[in-house]
Amino acid sequence: MPELKIRIDIVCVVPQVLESVVSTSILKRAQDKGLVEIHLHNLHDYASDAFRHIDDTPYGGGAGMVIQCEPVFACIERLQSERHYDEVIFLTPDGEVLHQSICNELSMRSNLILLCGHYKGIDQRIRESLVTREISIGDYVLTGGEFAAGVLTDAIVRLVPGVVGDAESVLEDSFMHGLLDAPLYTKPAVFRDLHVPDVLLSGNHAKIAAWRKDMATERTQHRRPDILDKGDVE
Ligand code: ADE
Image (cartoon, rainbow, N blue to C red):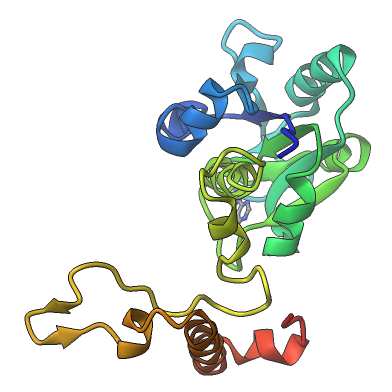
């Protein structure tokens, strides 16, 4: 299996939120194996004043603070002077809503910058001059983009070949073929009076595959008919 390496630089206001996310479990193992590099950058380190201010009040008035151009340009331009980045992604609730197909596409890139907002938002000039793509993880508003960057990083990294031991399991995930996953069972075959469906114990692989397809279709019809309507089912 070809081993792709991906580097993700996360530029944010509160890197502490992400420290444990990137240094435990599968994300840690992926980095230990040399398949992925994840770097956290604290925007306060790029502030130009002694108080490490990175935000100010919005021109024209209104509530909330706005992240200023200076620290964001300083941080991202420094990174870009060191290597080429395929995308500079701003996590924002008004971005394109994240979907498995976007994760698949991004997992094939080499270098990504994820920029997290905080407070009220960021100066529009950053979006126009530096950002190449804007992504939302869903139609709700978080206090900052850090959690969204953690979600996106996890969803991308697990697709990098070699990160998840069982490559087939990644390919069979919910959404991969336009359907949700079929129900899963493991040992014991009977727990209290709850039985695993007979077909899964039959050893008949064709029957099992057909059962899984039926169950996945039924579950998708019931829970996410919008996915079936899109007609992406393979
Ligand atoms: N920042 C705040 N809310 C967000 C969301 N829903 N998606 C991405 N970034 C965000």
